[in-house]
Image (cartoon, rainbow, N blue to C red; front, side):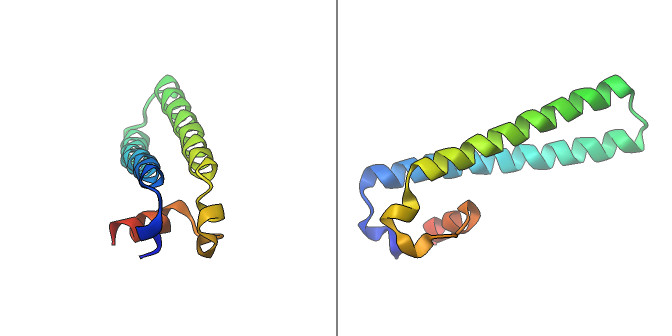
Length: 95
């Protein structure tokens, strides 16, 4: 496996980033479900604005998780992962 020779701290850091990513994926699905429900029920403008603000905050968090992942320099240590996104790395780690 690609990560078998990775230092233990890198594996822990990757695991933390991947856990954050998984949590954000769950919150993204909740936001999408909420938006669909509110749009069907003709929610007020204030409610939709609050949801939009939550979605923007979620997007900022996703960007920060991506930046955190990049800061681990996985691609420097494992050049074979150049261009591989975080989701695929997660799949590799789970394998």
